[in-house]
Length: 452
Image: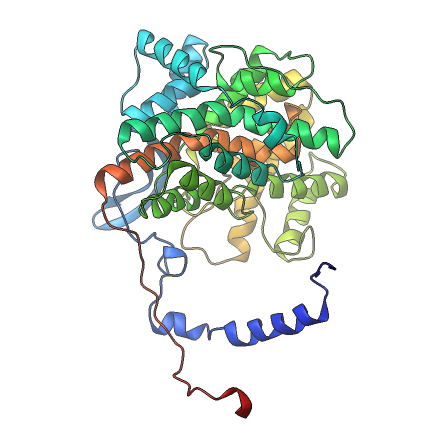
């Protein structure tokens, strides 16, 4: 039997019918005060839940007026900048203690952290032949699809998959948190071998090693990495671990969890959400844009030449003709994204170690110039600034990470937040999430088949 392709005339004709009937008059959204994307006309999110996992602050109220401020991000009430400062002061990697903080609501002491590292290591065991039978077979370029497939398949090996008691859900979450680095890297190694023809190697992780070190050592054939490389990757994981309950993938976790389904299904759904280019693919868009800027801007130190090209991008005359400068602006933050603010110093250190300070200088100039240029072009209800994705792709490139892993590494970090929100949802909300949709369909009489 022949395969049906997108360019099949039958599919195209039916698709035209979908488009003709499915296009709703945009004026109706305003007429019925529909909060598209669960955000009001001022961009403020519609309140749909409560959370104790994290908090985003981007403004303050003065004399009854909302005043934009430098953004702040709190994990369980603790400022993320203080967490990173503490890790830097002690010269240690901190992602695992952030996972502990998000799950259990407090920072671990030294013994609790050591015990938690052992627990994660004990959980980092794949079923027998899983790599051969699941990961190495039907490999493909899309690592997020591979990751979601692996997560759903793991459900088949769980003896208590549908048990929603918190101890069982925590066991499942810890298993996925511990396995995500391996599932991600092994899926890439399979693709790199079967599609790109490169040598296949599957490294076992070091016992009780931090996640950042596991990612680097299992990805590289020689397993070698520098202290700074591990530190900067760990920093990226910390900054991406959680970002409030309203981001798309976390909300997806809560929506699917509210139905009473299992942990694997909820996390797979979150992965499919993060896969979308409007969510997890932002740093890839930044990298594509930056590659074009580097090619077309001859003098990376010339503000006028850089500004001229940014204007072309905004005028839809360059890059992907979307009119967007990727990595600049955020749905929540205005004056600054705290993740980008704290990340920048470590990015500079890595750029110096890698000998690419000229490229780092170009990033810095765009970060400074882009908000000014955007303000000239568009009426904005809030300011814009560089977000964390503006720099994360550059970091991953300096670390030698393949672009296919950029979004999966986001997932390696964010599953910590997803897990915390899933547990919080199960503990506090007993109703299925079901928002209202207003029908604008006109009643139409049924016509018998012979009369149509």
